[in-house]
Image 1 (tube, rainbow, N blue to C red):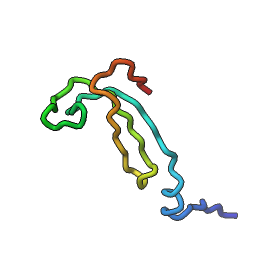
Image 2 (tube, rainbow, N blue to C red):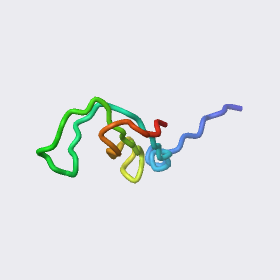
Image 3 (cartoon, rainbow, N blue to C red):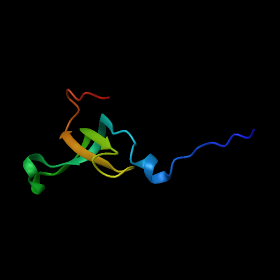
Image 4 (cartoon, rainbow, N blue to C red):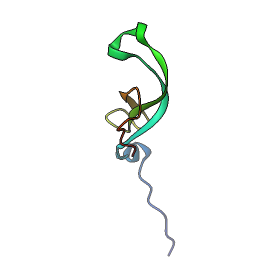
Length: 75
């Protein structure tokens, strides 16, 4: 008796990728109070990455939490 693996169609698999969240410190370009004239290059910023949702699979959203890494909960 031959065994054949069952494979789900690609769209089915992609619709069910888990949402991934990560908080980390990275160099960035920061603007305080939304004022573009106050922008500067910061050696470390606290950011939150959210991947695979609610955006499409493979897409990550970046949210700047702070222009430093003081009290940044790195996960």
